[in-house]
Each structure stands twice: as structure tokens, then as C-alpha cells.
Length: 246
Image (cartoon, rainbow, N blue to C red; front, side):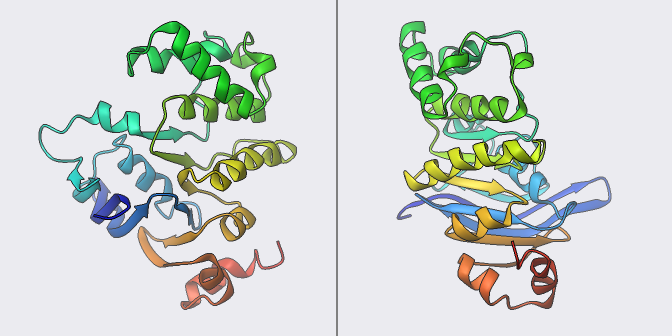
């Protein structure tokens, strides 16, 4: 298996008669930063939700270290504890403080004691610049601050892979930079990341692998310099042409 963490094989997903994903194949290796790009409605977020088992694929396989996570008897909760997710809309617990948001999963899922969980949470809240806000509730934070807490919460679970579902799309433009800075530093430290994004500069400059989706299929994929610099398909060229000057 080498350094492959996730392998998606012939994955399809339909809602009723509407086929959202069709015959998706790709691999995530240790240390990869894979950006999934494409127009709205191309199936990017659904693919991420299938990988994290928030949606049940209609057919195909998702292999985690060679084991099919869709197989009967596989433990989805244990798998999810290794594959973290950062959502577009933050998904923080509004009735909990910043610190408690980052502690609760460690205690309930990873069965850590509170002291250990607190120390671990603080490590990541420091990392994302949110340590001064540990007693705040989410309603007291800006969008960029909420997303940085959400990233710290995901990191505190020590995931092997971190999935990001359009992590900047709900943010005001001036807050996008602070979240991308955190993501860039994670990438530089070797965190394995799968990022659905409209931030083309991030996809081009930070990723080592880019997947362009259109109409529920992977239209083109490869190294950023290939996909951005020499796209093979007209559809990819048309999509990227509006970002060329970004």
C-alpha cells in the first residue's frame, strides 16, 4: 500500500434519479495537499461528505489504509476520528466556550481525561491564534475566528487527514486571509489535507495535487503546474481562464 491513506474507487452518488457523482477515482497519500476545484454544483462537497460518511455513496469503495470503510461491520466513528472535517459553516457548539468546543470530542470519542484534553486543545488554539478567546462563546467571535476554532477543534482530535469543505466561502473577504494563513502553515508542516475550495491561488500555490470536477465527474487532475499551466481539456481551460490573473 505504500503511503496511501485514502483510495476512492468508482464512487458514485445519486439523490433519487439525480446522479451527483459518477465513477470517481483518486488517491490521497501521506503529506498530500489535494485541492478539489470546480464550479458550484459540480459535486465537490458531496464527494467530501461521502468520504467522511456524512452521505452514503450509492456505489464504489472508499479504502482507508486498504480497508473498505463502506463494508458491513466497519466502525464509522473510529474512522471519522482519523479523518477530521472542517465545515463551511463552522458547526461549533454555540452553547459551549471555545475551549470546551475543542475538548468535548477528545473526551467523548478519544476517551482522554479532561486535563489532557485541555492541554491538547490549548496547544492547537495557540497554533491558530485563538488562545486569548478560550472563554468566549461562538456568537462573540467573527467568522474568521470561528473557522480558526473549528480548525483547532479538528486538529485536537489528531486526525491523519483533514477535510476542508469550502472553509472560506462563508467569510467576509478580509477574514479569508487569516484562515488561509493557518491552512498554509498546516500544509508546510506536512498535514495531509483534502480541500474543496474556490481559492484558486491556494490551489495553485499550496497544493501538490489538483482535481478539477465538472458535472459530477473528475474532468482533469494533476500537479498544479500542469492543471493551471497547461490544462488538457477545453472545459478546464474555460473554467480557469477567469482566474488566470489572480
